[in-house]
Amino acid sequence: QKEVEQDPGPLSVPEGAIVSLNCTYSNSAFQYFMWYRQYSRKGPELLMYTYSSGNKEDGRFTAQVDKSSKYISLFIRDSQPSDSATYLCAMSEGGGATNKLIFGTGTLLAVQP
Amino acid sequence: NAGVTQTPKFQVLKTGQSMTLQCAQDMNHEYMSWYRQDPGMGLRLIHYSVGAGITDQGEVPNGYNVSRSTTEDFPLRLLSAAPSQTSVYFCASSYSPGTGLEKLFFGSGTQLSVL
Image (tube, rainbow over all chains, first blue to last red; front, top):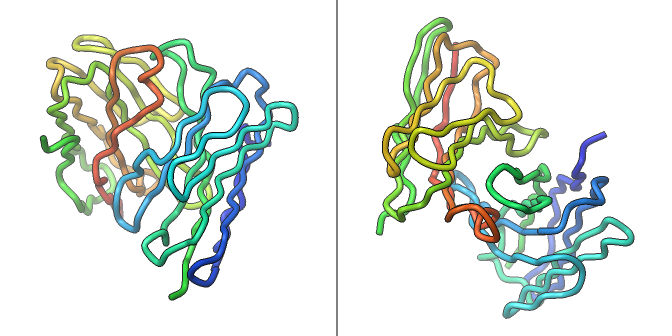
């Protein structure tokens, strides 16, 4: 079983829809949770960053962490065609450079105009 | 700032050939790393470095070598290419250890095919 599980999709939604992307994990020591966005043939870029449990909002994006359920989510409100990309969750135990990020396999999102 | 620059963008090798993937960053980041991205496998860490002269293995280091002689550069060497090394390779960097580690800055990738 992988440490981080993510539904690969693809997920296709109409423009303006609310999108929910999710990851589950098995390592209870994870403290740092991230979402990266990757456009086709580009490198990932950091979208959201959350420490421990709770919610974080940035414009149309909201990241949620539920450590009791080992479950994280990314919500995109009023989705736009420019949001079409692969979304990767990532997490780490923290504590310095020797702690490594574990990535999910990514969910491919297509927002139809 | 150029950020993280990778060269080449595309490369085709024959089995047994060697080559070096170049990575340079101009953000004065201490931490640099190499990942490979394969369908269904996600991003997997190959090697990483926490500063000039210091390197360590990641999850999938076999068949790859790295060195870090300067803060800016972190080349990845394939010693004897194998078809299993066909992948997209990403270099990433970050600020020094601590809360900055997780905020990785990625290059645009090198697509490598080994025939």
